Image: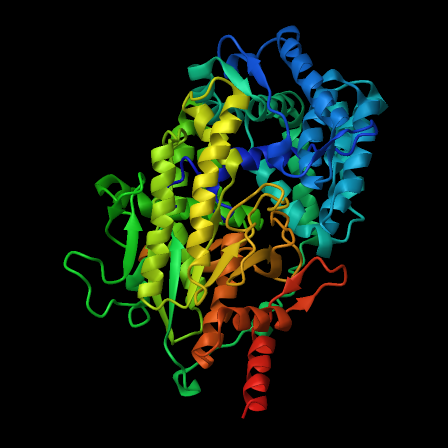
Length: 632
């Protein structure tokens, strides 16, 4: 499954390429369970209906249009949102929050404060994570309170009233629980601007609209959120940022790090057996792991001795890293600084890189944003596999790294989906796994994933399909080809342990049919992300396939060329678990995948609420030693 399109596989780390997502997340306008009766049971996201919105002109023009013009569009959206919430029995909380996020946005645009407050109450009840439940909707409530107290929605008095209400709601919150989310909100507020909102529309929505002259519900509904951003959120940027900055300064006590005490560092005196580990990802700079890289004993003529790779269209290629042209080689050091700047902003670190990034973002015009997003996408992908490899290899001289390189698509308009591409991707999944098996790979890391919704988006951006319902049917067929190919490939290698990332959508991977994280196989382990203190990450997905959690928050590792940067995501949690699995196999190569999974799960510590099961390397190694002694 080497191509991102039609099945848009995505690296599972929080990275700058998700700029549009960061902007959307910064709105924090979520909603909740309706009171009306529901009829049709929804078991997966695919069971929900699709809608179409004909639009004349551009999305940018509509977004900036007068109230009467935009309200005519918004009324159509409201009718469809209400129909879904009234007629469908949706048990998935994340999906309900997403749907009612649109309803809340519509209520805010209509100035219906009473309905907005009711929706905010309901979303708090639907939040599953403790930090989200505490912080949910506070900025919106403060905005409504300020509007109600003074009867105005702009001006100095309104901004002062908003800041006072917002600060009062944040101040009593337990920083140990909500601190990460507050810092993430501050980071989003710092980079958010009208140019970035409009530029994100140009990058993500205009290409689809230009081809079909209509938008699917996902893209149309995101336009509703963009309208709220321009009309209500951005005018309050200065007081919002002032409140968040002060709150961080007043409370920013570093959370304790539980991971160092759990770490096992192996040495050559531990009687280790070399263990072959494949990083099935965007490519890894194996030159950084000299002496710990895997080399095929007798490679075939023209074959790579360290890796297997396929290009964007699924054809065999060479090299354990994406090749850079001359311009990209010159750009890369600067992009590393920008990646570090994003990381520092998320942690509220006032670094030169963060300052430079904020300045650059403030000077971008809307027309410059699409190219900026695409460039960040490319270099984030280019860096991803090496960062993952560095985490997997830490503290283990016995690891032997190999590469299964996927060429992920970094373009704003991805490669056009087709059955030919999907079938080739399924064949490539088998080829990857066959290579892993032939080269005695014991553990494979998969920090990526995707679902049928990604296919629908790729189809729409390429102007394919008659309408949203037609794209849903096409996507379902194409996705099934790739899903089944990947499932059968993993299943065919029972002696290999595959470890994958849960996803970063703060949702149930099973409901969204994300692969591979929704798979249930005895040789597959899915991992969620927690922070340095072992608390659930704001972004991590979950579900009954997620058996353990590992550090996925601002994890430092290496990039191509040896640069050190912190990334966040379940992409980082997965190789932290691979790190443990490889150490267990280095200590006892006779272990089967099922036995390794058992040691990892049995050694993990569960949280009081049962939502998290944080890995513990020392405890799992201890259980292995107990098992070995018992068999003597």
